[in-house]
Length: 223
Image (cartoon, rainbow, N blue to C red; front, top):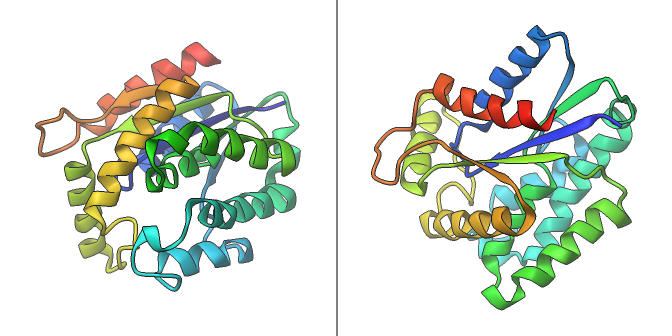
């Protein structure tokens, strides 16, 4: 089986940038690398995700329950896996880098629940996607941790530069705060590697190459 490495973090945490930096470095070392990004907005499988994030089911993330929303994102991943990268997942000589995965549901949707229901939700999520749907389990999950204040500022800056509107997750500061707390809990419970991307009092993230070196060291240890 291929090695599946997932990069997680709040919107604006630099997942796409770090996925590319890591892919280029591993490719330069002679490894066969496949990159994935979820949601796969170009796929028909992401239709429900797009409707949810655009506010068609409610203007607040909390308007859609965590189990229903999780199923939207799981369907997108299943469609991508079954139609595209399943063969790559079976190759022993391949490293698959995913910008978000099942693990994104673990904190984005976990944050909608009271704390006493968190463990039950995580147990359900892993069983639903990895057992019932048969999606591969990650070999390593890296959580790019950045204060929500910094990540929100980066999301706004990106939206201004690109003209892309923000989604219901990105424009809800309280939701992002709760999601960061949920991500820290999931990381402790599941043994994810936490990669610091900015100090708690920082206004800007650390330089991408500095973060990239932290990511590479964590991945090198796993490979």
